[in-house]
Image (cartoon, rainbow, N blue to C red; front, side):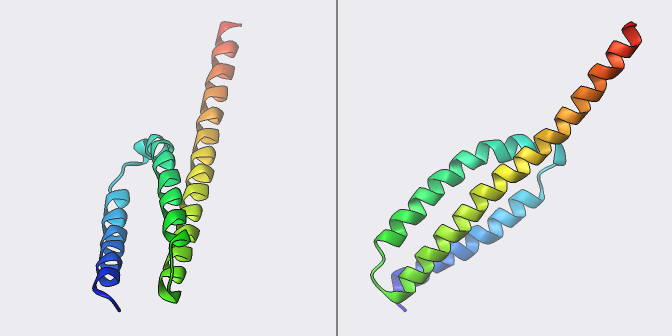
Length: 106
């Protein structure tokens, strides 16, 4: 294992731990706007993972590049799914509030 690969693996592991700590501290009310904003960033991460996978020249870097692409894709798709589900929950509240308002007016 080369020194450069060990450094990259260390950065990856540290990024995982930092990401878990940051996301676990986010309040539920801020989760939807945060997910919407970070989905664009995750798209950029996916492009970076594709560039790394395309430049891979050894079996270890090919596997790590493929893993990076799979994880980044899962993150982007999962973020959009969660954001969509949370926005649907807010639409349900707004529709119920409008129905209650129109019932009070009549």
